[in-house]
Image (tube, rainbow, N blue to C red):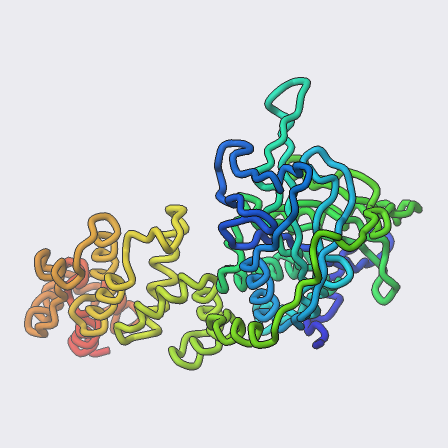
Length: 492
């Protein structure tokens, strides 16, 4: 396993009242497996149904009901392991993790403890400016989700919704390899991207389909690991960063005041910007793990693993490297374009118009910028890849200028249509007739004799003349032709 490669430790230390501190972060990410049925029953995993409408007799823990393993969930876990270069265990077992909670009907959770389906792997995280870190993954195991307790519907009673009970989760356990909130946020972002690329989890944090338990401890640089606290169920990448910063400061304050950090489970309150104690942190023996007697060991053939590996799509890092080499885009642009598989596919369809760098520029700055402003995902873009590709083709052919292209983009966004037909029907073609452009240049020069002398003394003022000519031509004059003609006529 490669060790993390990062900037000097001094750039990530937290200054306390008595000196510098290093934060150490590990994470357990719970990712809901993409599957139409639950892990051990045929009940639906659909989101948003009325309470307790997606509950089988198995999910409700009715007497005599036995779990039956959903093979698709197993395949998704294997694909996830393969996507992070992890070891796949051909034999794994399910265990019972015993604890009481009202939304856990069985009184235990079926999980994997000693023998998970996926062993050690790693995730390479790009931190920008040439810096990358490698975060080790200790294991990925399959387990059931619990139900949901609802406490705000009645002043004296709580309600339980078991729709989520029994839904398959992958628990992805990292090693304590992260040293800042930025690294932790980047790790979650990268892992979420990978899972979405392969279709193993939709990564929707608003629905709780991907959430994190964050382990935070602090120490003096070079000293042994400190006592960690676990922040449970953080369902926003922004909140993960905030929770780490707050918790690290809390622990530093305790130690610097002469106290000791207690190992415990805490919750992050984003409204108050604080973590608060939930319960003492349990150890494995507190859960009284033992093998589930209703489930045989899970065995997977190597041939099936090989087939799943061969069928994986192109992964983000591979796609990013290809975009840089094939399309000549910058590493930063390649990173932005490959954050989502749908965005990468959209860009490639646009780049088919011919000018890949122009396609990247328009996709990132104009399209992504507008989508972000409107709060839309790429799948809901009013401008299709074919339309944007058509617009870029018109720029490349010098049919329209960059300014006209922006006007055309607005028309496509609000009204739709075929770019080439719109240029014809609305007379949007740029003027390339040098005679017509010369006439406009002559008029602007004649009207501004004082500016002419200034431009000859300070050639950069030619930009003012270019702007006036473009304005006079309604933005339709070819900018390069305007520039060339003005240079000649002004003697610059």
